[in-house]
Image (cartoon, protein in one colour):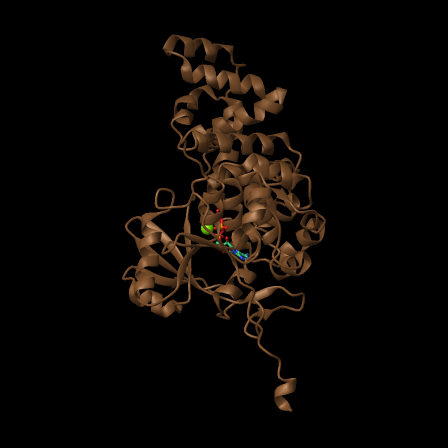
Length: 427
Ligand code: ATP
Ligand code: MG
């Protein structure tokens, strides 16, 4: 009788196994394949998974490699000397192999008592281990849930990810609203992958953007900083920004920024160009751009020398995205140098040109000049000045309006007082 009521454990549906693909050692990272080999020879299942399989199938060179295994995290650390468990919300193992870093995670499941949710369905901790099949279903998008088994060169697909890659679709596994409630950052991931690969985001995801933007408030600002780096420092910032600024997401990330600011768009494009050309980039520059209007507004109403508009602008941003101090300092330097670039005080031009943030400050000025006529003459002057020889520099300096020498009131006052006391015999 009892047996009658006991639910029969159903076998999970068999995945598709795909052999007709171009993945192989040429595209895939040797270190990641080695990690899998070591796990396999020790009796564990192990597969490449996630972005590396997705990107390789799209013909894009993967930038990092994730491995999924049935080995517990501690077992993984025992097999690899240079490895350690990282992450609190979502622990994984970082395995160092030569100069490579491979992220190894144990199969997990998302439908379990061990997954801790808040009262709105957001996953707080996800530490319930599971099978390969369960692991596939806890991943976010179908295109991110493909496994590559190097031992037989098969791609294992439980969720129709290969078809979605062919159709260029970003689609959640399961119910969109539930998956976004579990983790609102997934909305940013959808935009990022669509920008990177030219994929279309499914309608039900797009129609949830507004609601999800509000929920980003619950995400730790440090996690959003990591996401900020991935969104804007991977070579497709302009496409990402164009998407974000059409939605409340831009202001969910940067509350004080005008999403339609031409400076922001120009800076995104410039960041992509620099990455393409192999030039250096820093998140500090984008911070300077995105908080510039807020800094300026605060600077304009500054009441005393004790007011610190840069500090205030950076501080008010921290509740959304935690910007590490060094990038905040970079932004502050770029802002404060703007005034000096405009003033062009003849006596300190040489010092200004050798200032460690001169180049960044000048780049910032040039970006502003692209959309702001009033800045153009100044930016052009600096371009000419840097390309000029000594006599040309003198000519450029001669063009500058004469700045009246600042009277040193304090010194004059002290001098007068000294003379006074000498003549009156006081002091
Ligand atoms: P890229 O490395 O290009 O940023 P990726 O897809 O590899 O893209 P990762 O953040 O490295 O992204 O994550 C690896 C895999 O882990 C993803 O492909 C996905 O399967 C899973 N994953 C990552 N973040 C989430 C999340 N927030 N929710 C569900 N699954 C996730
Ligand atoms: Mg990855």
